[in-house]
Amino acid sequence: MIIGVINGSPRKNSNSEKISKYFESTIKAEKLANEVEMFSLKNNPLEFWHQGFWDPASEASKNWKPWATRIERCTSFVVISPEYGGMATACLKNFFTICGGSLLAHKPAMIVAVSSGEGGSYAQAELRMSSYKNNRICFIPDHMVIKRADDMLNGEQAAAGEDEHIRQRVFHSLKSLKRYDLALQTVRRNDDFDYKSFPFGM
Ligand SMILES: Cc1cc2nc3c(=O)[nH]c(=O)nc-3n(C[C@H](O)[C@H](O)[C@H](O)COP(=O)(O)O)c2cc1C
Image (cartoon, rainbow, N blue to C red; front, side, top):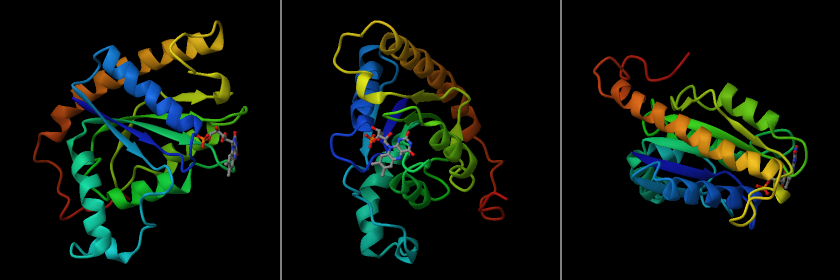
């Protein structure tokens, strides 16, 4: 079991980056997976999708290859998205577009939406609505919306109240993700998916 943690913020020193690291350390400390793979969209490391991604000999495909190799190893994901302008971030939507139809297919993922204010719900809803059809990632029912993120998950010691509750929720949700990870491994091991005839969702 290998959990990929995706930081969907393009900003330096973002709350999403801080939260990614918190997830990483919790997974390791609680031994919730054999490995953790960290993916960061800080400073927009990926090109915006263009036709070249369909040409295996292109520069874009060559640059993407190391990402694809690491993504393929993962058996489940934590997807951390800030809410920008009431949306999931462009770099995260771009990431899902580049991933194509197989790297994420039938792997469970937990959405963690992040807001420094009272938002976050739109980013979470948008990912559920429009970021799974062709890549076939399976967003689990459990998600998190971390509001007032400047005050959450700072340092090792929990602050009493909401911060403590959020930390407990991270642990609980990761245990849920682990169960889906184990269960969906059997879904991926079969011959029923005919992607030649049905390459895209409807
Ligand atoms: C361009 C931009 C748009 C934003 N729009 C929203 C928004 O619509 N709703 C919201 O709750 N917070 C919004 N924020 C604030 C983020 O919630 C805040 O930056 C938070 O820390 C999550 O982003 P980060 O992980 O990049 O730090 C916005 C921030 C930026 C930079």
